Length: 116
Image (cartoon, rainbow, N blue to C red; front, side, top):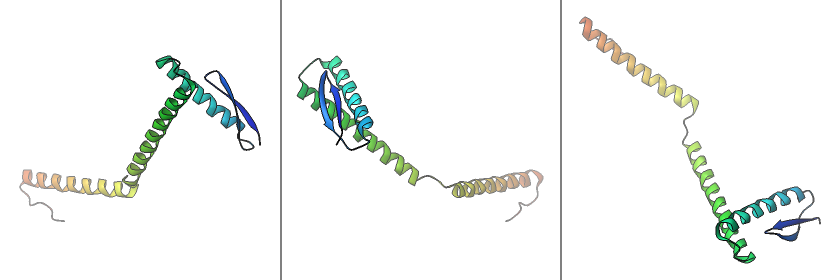
């Protein structure tokens, strides 16, 4: 099983992973390290354990927001109007407008409106 050296907050950790997952694990480690550095810049060095817990909570919050966004997008997609529904609705609007125009025109000319 391959191992990847992951550096977080200036400390190296050897993490085992599956074959072919080394690059992905390294990217994840870089992301966590970047978030730790951001947190250190904001609150200072408060200990590795505390920093890792705080960063874990920040990342969990990001994940929860992403799940909520996906759920909202999925709900919006379910409520989306199909092209056929849109075409039907536009046809209804155009027909209603044509009827009103015919009625208005008939009122101006004194003729009876055309019944459909």
